[in-house]
Amino acid sequence: MNYTIIEQIPMMKRAKSFIKRYGLKVVWVAGKTDIPDCRLSAWMNGNELLYAHQFERMKDFLDEYEECMSGFSYMKDSE
Image (cartoon, rainbow, N blue to C red):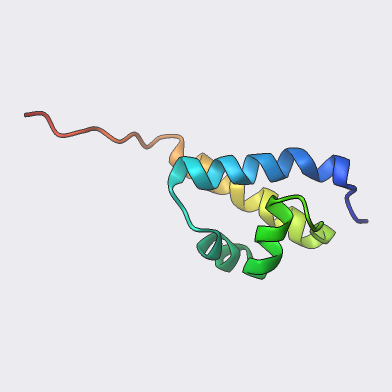
């Protein structure tokens, strides 16, 4: 089963926000999710759809990464 553009738009926005929030590179996320970086970039810009297995991998990756980071907080050194 493939997901429609309407079903993929919220995940596109989530992925863009995720990359910006954590200061990551699309190439790094593409490598971690085994999605070609040009396809991932085109998807996040709304120019392509991911296949169902790629979409599920992206969702699972974001869920797992955010769960791991939820207990982590950056604390600036005190002067």
